[in-house]
Length: 485
Image (cartoon, rainbow, N blue to C red; front, side):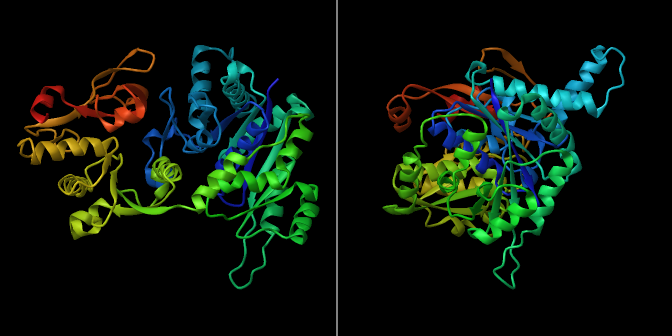
């Protein structure tokens, strides 16, 4: 039987529930347990695919083509379990499913209500997601509930997991609550009152946390932990200090040193082998002791909210660990290049132009790509960045003056990049879209088989073929391929 750990958040959002959940999962996995993870998002959007990067951050694409919350990226970076569309669902998906059932007559004429119909649907989605990994034989499913306790949007999810805990039995569920312990600028004193109120609100709902994780600017003292313990009715050893660190890869050790995994295993009657975090400790050691520095520029238009490029940032960090380098990321707004000139990107060791939508800042990106090509600076174009590299080459090398993507100029004489009309998904099924298709859920997405050209560095690293995760709307027009080559 799968056992469940439910993680909630209090006081404010963006405390790091995803990283905390993933860190706990990494510890439990190191103890030999089979762990899967789920993220529940309380917004009404069906998925984050059409949400502004400034509001939501990046969209994490799973191998099976789901557009999901960026926390699933943390899950995949911390544990070996691969995420799928079943590991993330939203209020929008829940209501969509319930309404379809109502229209089919599945509820036999009953009045459809939040309780029990919505809450039952949430529980069904959780169980389905948990059983999707390890062929239904996972030991633990860690369920992160998005939002903040007290938000009206989160109430159906909290009620659903409360009911679920009653059905599961005491040995089969565990509640963790991550909360902020702020400090006032005029003193170094940490204020525990917001945490007390947050736990009180959670208890009013009928959820009693087994562990309270206290996020603060520094390690929380024994006196402060004792105070939180007393007013929250949680044993002092279950009040865990999680302080700000310079690398998220230190969090597993911070949790394990305070015995969080032992508390979980004791409560849920697991008796696994001891935790082995030697890999994580070596990783942190390499981060803290690089042999050289490299400066990499990310040219985009969402740089004011770097969560928009989360997976890219983490991939660069991983590359730095692998090469024993400190990667210094320079975030450069492509519109600034248009207005201030190319001097902004000089002295970089490499340039990356990631994905994006809309024509704002496009010419600045093309200017950066042109500079990288002419000055032989290592360049990586991802999604839109790759497409604009084709546009730049077509204009300045192939002689196709004013070449463009149809996304930015529908009447361009040389549409080197245009709408994808038909493609095969990872299962081989043919997918189609047109200019009139919905924006949401109609891109080519998920793992795609890629053939790698012989006698290239990429071939030397990855071999003749590999899988890339796509989230694409446009592609190179084949009829112009010969001209470009």
